[in-house]
Length: 115
Image (tube, rainbow, N blue to C red):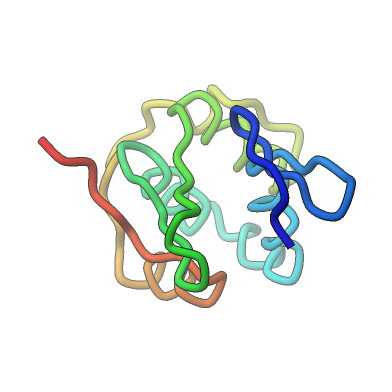
């Protein structure tokens, strides 16, 4: 049960979880998919210039910087890479069909930024 919002954190039953940590934890069952570097790059690109809205709680919208996205993908892969291995690697803001299906399984749909 959500009890308090503060900056980028949500409070659930007495403990604070950074929203980025919540996203990371939801990826755990799918970590093997990130062994495919092409898939990992597609996920990085989809995280850039895109917001992701929870299917279950539409008020929860996730976005991150390109640098953070690169670091997140590098950390998930666990191959000794750093954010620069993904940062500005191309396709930023493009959501491929397989990545959109992946995020849908996680409970998120793309929510493009308004221009």
